[in-house]
Length: 297
Ligand SMILES: Cc1cc2nc3c(=O)[nH]c(=O)nc-3n(C[C@H](O)[C@H](O)[C@H](O)COP(=O)(O)OP(=O)(O)OC[C@H]3O[C@@H](n4cnc5c(N)ncnc54)[C@H](O)[C@@H]3O)c2cc1C
Figure (spheres, rainbow, N blue to C red):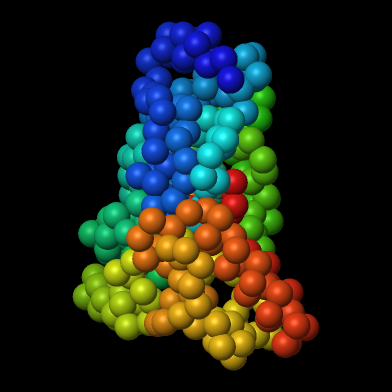
């Protein structure tokens, strides 16, 4: 991949970048090969410049939030990442909160609390970014992003800065209308005023529930599979006797069978082998096809 002219072009717009990045350091799974280039735009305008340059020089790109829902291949990464971390401003006006795509979910929930705004308690323990949460329609404990998103600002695959309303985002289970090549830059959420003590106590309650049920002490990408209609993926996996099952450095968590953990040195191949084994055995025993929630790239 010839990135030289691309780098020269984005440098004119003062976009930060780094070369030869180890994806183990950029994903919560701590798995992945070397990415030739990660760029860090700090605004929708910079995202637009990056996408236009990528189109001009034939560079494929992939949007990277906090890498908490990703399984990245061990080698042969022939595209660049647009990482959203520097788009990290937050603003509250009345009951409306606007957060840059790179803001962490937890920080955004705490900011809502500081402004006595309720509605984001459920994302407090989700380790991703607001952009990733919107793209994935992240949810937990009976709430999801579609409950609060009013609109998003994003850049489309041609580099145009656009806006979509919550309705136009067509949220579904762990999905939205944000398509391939589109980068969410900021998310505006409609919340409600409430007593901060009540908000804090709900946030604490949900964090404690997570700590009790999830293997947070190990690297992972959260629930590997989507919830199949009428079942729980973790229960199906457990009922196949796969809890604790190992492939290289990867293991089906003993604590929560819906999680695959990296016990040290796991490769993408180790995880893929486990995923395939789980899918085969669950299908054989229950006739249910488990689909991955984790994005495999
Ligand atoms: C311990 C643990 C617990 C978890 N618990 C939950 C949970 O309770 N509920 C839940 O829903 N998820 C959960 N997750 C999964 C994950 O945190 C969420 O899916 C999160 O929303 C992903 O955000 P991210 O920034 O890490 O996205 P990434 O992993 O970086 O990317 C995920 C996908 O979103 C896309 N994307 C990211 N940012 C943008 C953007 N700005 N514009 C366009 N596309 C974008 C990427 O291209 C990719 O396809 C958990 C993960 C872990 C490790």
